[in-house]
Amino acid sequence: MTTLLYERLQDAFREFGWTRIPEVVDHHAEEAAKHNISYLEFLDKLLQEELLSKRERFIRMKTRVAHLPFHKKLDQFDFSFQPSIDERRIRELAALRFLAHRENLIFLGPPGVGKTHLAVAIALEAIKQRYTVYFTTAHELVETLQQAHQNNTIRQKIKVFTKPNLLIIDEIGYRKMEDAAAHFFFQIVSERYETGSIILTSNKSYGAWGEIFGDAVLATAILDRLLHHSTTINIKGESYRIKEKKKAGFFRPEGSEDKPE
Image (cartoon, rainbow, N blue to C red):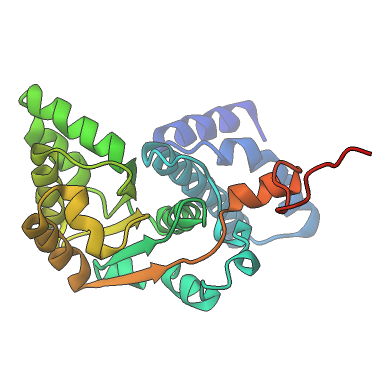
């Protein structure tokens, strides 16, 4: 390849915004010459490399802006430890038909049973399929809304929670919401109703949501919109964190205290 041709190609790559092809063009050119690869096949190999690189950059960027607390996939979930979960049902949900239909998904269960892991795993699948995702805990959501209300930026902040294709609200029920925050929460749920999906995790049954929002009527209105098009997964089982502590020897069966010799 002549110097002039090489420089022209590099200029073209920059103009198109291609980043992967400049790294691999020499290798593929050598392979094409060595194996007598056709021009079209050579071009296809270069473009596929660029498309794959672009997709990987997109996923990294969308994952970063999603604010996920960790990156755990569905294959890392120990279904054998939680027999109350139907693995086939979870994998069907991970196919994202609920997201395409703008439906909601609620995981209920005690702390530590894997609700957040499942929510994050499905979020990662959604990002791979080019959906926009935003993750927040209920505590962070309340603090953000209260601060925005004080700063007169509540409308702009609510848009942050209504714009993504998928909004994940983790840990509903660990603290009671003040009146203003509860009404803003209702507003977010209402604006997303039939326009965007929500994944929500909670340690409280639906019957206790009146206590969370401090108003049984408001809780009913929220649940009415959340549950109209939704799937609820109830998880009953032991905490993974307690399981790990037992493995490490921090928990002992009753009556197994050390006895003096």
